[in-house]
Image (cartoon, rainbow, N blue to C red):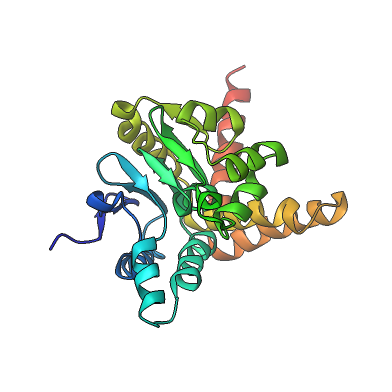
Amino acid sequence: MDPLVITDERQDYAVIRMNRPAKKNAMNRAARRDLLNAFEVVRGRLKVVILTGTSDSFCSGVDLKEAFDDLQNGRSDDASSDWMEVNLAIRSHPAIFIAAVNGVALGGGATLINVCDLAFAADEAEIGLPELGFSAYPQLAGPATQIQLSRKRAAWLVLTGKRINGSTAEQWGMVNRSVPRAQLQAEIEKLAQQIAQYDAAALSETKRALDVIPAQIADWRPAFEYGVDVNTRIRNQSGAQRAGLEAFASQTRSNQDGL
C-alpha cells in the first residue's frame, strides 16, 4: 500500500505531499494522523515546509465518505476535531509553511491554503467551498476564508459553490502567486530555498508576529512594543541578529573608507 503522506527532506526544507490521488487527496482518518506525524518529524529540524498534493489534486478536504460511514455505523465523528488539529498545527509550527496548490482544492483544501504562511497556485488549480450544496456551512474552510479575504469574496465562495482558478486566487489575495502547473514546483522550491537561508529563531518569531499583529494587537503603541519584544526574543535564542548587524556595520565602514 502506498503511503498516505510522503515527506521528502531537502537541505533546510521539506516537501510534504498528500498522497491519495484516487480520492483527490481527501484526508481520511489515517491520512490526517500521518499528516500530523509528518509535521512533528520535521519540527525543530527544518525551517520551511512545502505542502502539496499528488497528481492533479491538492486536497479535496476531509474524506466525507468515511465520515458518513462512521455516522451510519454509530462511530464517533472525529473528522472535525482532528482536522482542526491538523490546521492549527500548521499555525503553531515553527517552520514556515508554503502551500503548493497543484490542482483541485475543495473545502478543507481551501482551509490548508489559508492557514499556510505563503501559497503558490497552478494557473489550472480549482479552489472552491462546495459545502452549502449539501446543506452545510464550511465549518473550518468558511472561517479560514473569511479571515483571509474580503467579505464579498468570501461570500462568493461560500454562497455560490463556484470554483476559482489560480489566477483569480492571486488577484483576490488567497495565494501569493499563480504560475503554470509545469513551473509550480520549481518556483516554489526556489522560494523555499531563499526563506530557508534565514535564521530559524527569526523565522519562527516573525511567523508568530504575523499572527498577533493585527489579529490580537491593533493599536499602534502596543504593536510597536510587541515588535521590539519580538527582536528581544530572537536575540535571546540566537546570535544571528547580532552577527548580521556586525556584518552590515563592517560593510558600511568599508564603503565609507572607499569614498
